Amino acid sequence: MKLYYNPLSTYSQKVLIALYEKQVDCELVHVNLTTPEGRAEYEQVYPIGKVPLLNPGDDYMVPESTIIIEYLEGHYPTGTRLIPEGVDAARQVRFMDRMSDLYLNNPCATLLFERLGFSKHGEAELAQAGKYLRISYEQIDKRLANQDWLCGEFSMADCAAIPAFFYGQIVASYADYPNIVRYYERAQQRPSYARVRAEFVPIWDSMLSQRAQA
Ligand SMILES: N[C@@H](CCC(=O)N[C@@H](CS)C(=O)NCC(=O)O)C(=O)O
Image 1 (cartoon, rainbow, N blue to C red):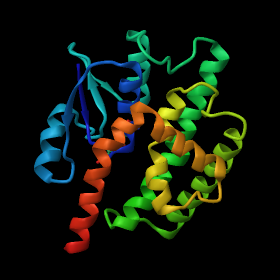
Image 2 (cartoon, rainbow, N blue to C red):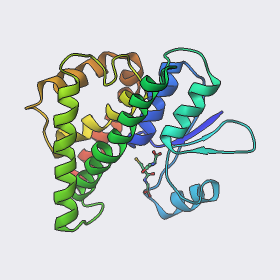
Image 3 (tube, rainbow, N blue to C red):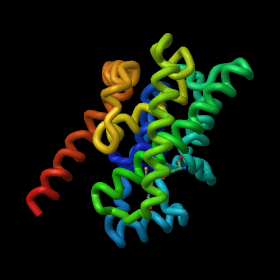
Image 4 (cartoon, rainbow, N blue to C red):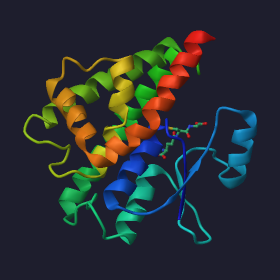
């Protein structure tokens, strides 16, 4: 099985956390979308050009982070169960996974790319991203008042939310949300996310220092 990914991509990190939680062996294929050649090469594999993408080793591909985790959960009974068995508990996890992707991760990426000058957004789009992020912080902080993880036990929802808080602290501080601060600290104690950070933080730091020297 192969995972096409980029260490800095939050959606890739979401799937890496899931792979490590489920203790599934997988070949990691680093995709570079920052050069036209890297992008063109990857688009031969996946024309949409987004990471992550899983090739389970069969003649089909599994795109989209959530669908990849659904695939892993369905095929590997090992490690942490990331989508609970009960219908209502599973729906809650899927709901928080969607909320994390759409209203936490995506707006965070919009603000980050604007900050880094990777893309230009209009005022309205930036204002909407800021609004979604603030609402997400409020809701997530409330949810975490009485539990360690978003849906009680660690789940796919946490795989989706945790990576955004690394970039979130740069684009829109959540220092005023103590339950989120503790959540992100707790996440870093978890071996799965600690392993993800060990790979991407040095890459991120070196990218920032190269930009500073340029
Ligand atoms: N809905 C997709 C989103 C994937 C996504 O947006 N990936 C970003 C990196 S975090 C990407 O590949 N961006 C490259 C591009 O848009 O060209 C998922 O859940 O996998």
